[in-house]
Length: 480
Ligand SMILES: Cc1ncc(COP(=O)(O)O)c(C=O)c1O
Image 1 (cartoon, helix red, strand yellow):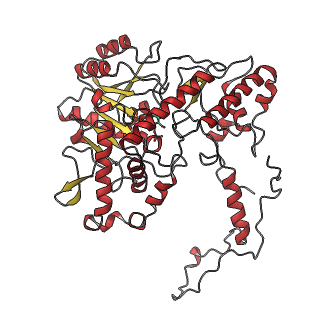
Image 2: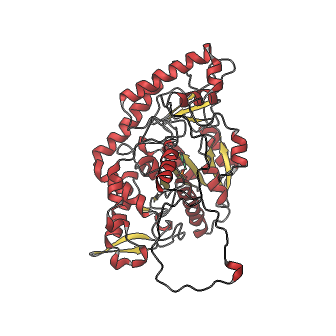
């Protein structure tokens, strides 16, 4: 237990304290116009050790995958091997700049080209573009591509996209941002797409269906068994199939979405290929496309020209989604991860992701029931309202007291009091068992000492937030 009290004073600035010494300027000084001169800077004055302690203390308040178990469903907080960082920090990669031109970027372009080819192979696609900066950005690119395809055939009436009600919120958002209309498809009793509703939806919007956005495995952690039939029906109706490939860590080396009728799909590097997630840092949501859409991919993409690599726009490209060729640093990390694992290792990633999730599912559902209880893929969705007056939020907050990050809660929306658990392939049996032990304990507390859950978290610098106020009126800087 950490008995160290919080510092009582936050404001530690004191006049005259200095942490840096700047070299004497060697350029002549010029007087500024009086209106531009600042007379009072109001910067904190601190010595180096105080600054180091301040930031180190702040960093320790952060919950991270490097410190504790983080079973955040749908967001896949899996361990990012440090070897990725070593590769991304190699001077040749770290110090290069895209404006040095193709001639001096051959190594970087070769890596981009190789990664494109590896992802095409993993996903079963004809071509891949590494441009988009996140999963949602890849979705937007994919919907633009579908729209561009129809327009290239003079088919401007196709403006509707079918989206299952279990989809990640980014699916309808991307569709709307691309100027198309999202039509919601209900799920069936098994948690998959309701095939009768799909047929009715395709009939009702005949001639106007641009396509479908389908997540496989879906956000319930369930494999969409009818994927080939869904793709066949949508194609028959003149539409195209967008695959949300965010959950590819359940499929790598086992199943190629491109071979199941998907025309375009995004990969989430942070979810599948172990690049850092969160914090708003640079990400990547590259898109793969089959025969119908490869020419529409965003560009430029890297191509091989004899002994050289060059950048080229695909023939009917929707254009750029990002400056240069995407977020290069995370591409190096993903490339390193794929090369470290090789084909067999990638298959084991999927096998272990599914094994870990099913192991937890079978044990956790004894205390937290599931709405859809069939065998899961990489994640499962339980329900947290197991005792009178107890809600999923209480379970989530109590987990923090036991040093475990809460699972994703209240998503997907079709499961009441959803508690969405994704252990990931990188966790050991000991960690999974500890999670089961803690969840079982919390389930008992929920019935016998509910006040403990209502008061949680008690081990964090602040307890329960007013989450609406925090989202609507955030205070983003320190106020003395
Ligand atoms: C199923 C699914 N689709 C789309 C996304 C959006 O990806 P991103 O957060 O990279 O924009 C996520 C996020 O993790 C997801 O889980």
